[in-house]
Image (cartoon, rainbow, N blue to C red; front, side, top):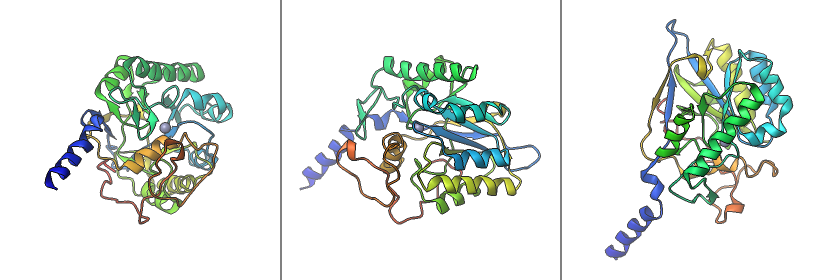
Length: 297
Ligand SMILES: [Zn+2]
């Protein structure tokens, strides 16, 4: 019996080789010398559409933001891109990859989704995204964030070799756009000085976007100072080996999967097949807030 249990534990690690080598980097920005609460809002535009609730809240408040776009998203969102490009002081456009492929080299699939798998493919994902950003904005990207915000070490080095820093974060506001609006609003509004907030700007049918818009307005009303990543000193830190709960990583990946399906709130549990993967709400409603400001979610 005991031997069986040991074998099971060994097998659990053996089938997850990436656990030992993947990183989920954290990032903070320097706080303001004047003491104002300094927050870097970052948004991922993985694929699909633009969430006007979020974009309009940014336009209305003038809150600066760093937006990570894929080549794939850029192709279908010319108008939204134009709105952001018209305000270069407010919006920084950075690289989220060519096709939103997880940049892992040590495993072929992660949670049922095909990864880049090789350095060659990682190189193409980063370079393809950078090329699309350069073409769309006229400026080379300075930051890269992968589809899962997690990386094998060699992928991080490759981004560096291509002239891009790894865009970690310290506060996950929407967990792959999976959280309900009131929770997202609360999390954004509670951002601490120095936080780099990660959220999504490409999910107009999800509840999360309404919470982001409200949270942005609340931060603005509180007198927060918004900064783009390219205008402040940043402090990267490697996180420990993967400890992000599986459901949250799945949501990061599946943002791209159900762009055409609309929202499916309330489903829970882990589906078996990759094609059935969907958005999962944390069991029990409110997410654990222990991570706040510490980055691990
Ligand atoms: Zn993404």
